[in-house]
Amino acid sequence: MGKPLSERELHNLAMNIVGRELEEEGFEFMGVNSEPKRNPQFVCLKDKILHFIVVRHVPYPENPNIYDEALMTKMKGHADKHEARTYYAGVGLSNAENPELPVYLDEAYVVDYIGLIEIKDE
Image 1: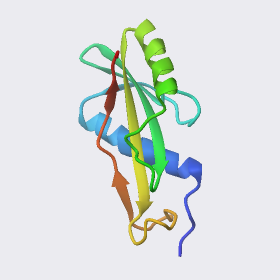
Image 2: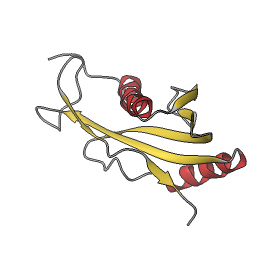
Image 3: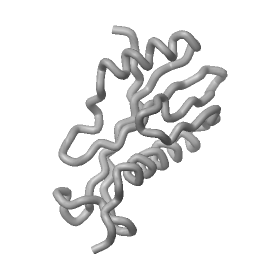
Image 4: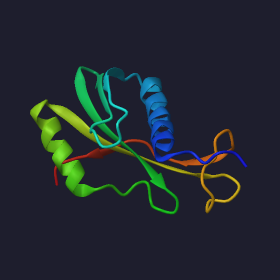
């Protein structure tokens, strides 16, 4: 067995997964904040529009597509002041052999990520 990934390593892995997708979709990185408690994690520019993206690693068996509404409402308020769009990116990571086990360094894992979820006004 390898070494289980720490919360920080899982967060960084989630950041890498989302970052790669943003790159592929042509987002330009204006700011990257890898601290899990400092939001947003990514501030990007695409089509002359600012995008604030909050990234979260979500442990199995939690649903990575359910976000903290209070946090995201606060983020949206912050983004609106900058005429930015707000997104949540929840990344579920689990052990490929047995989802009940931790994700280990250098071992296969499963990614449960549907992409960016835009936070819009109700």
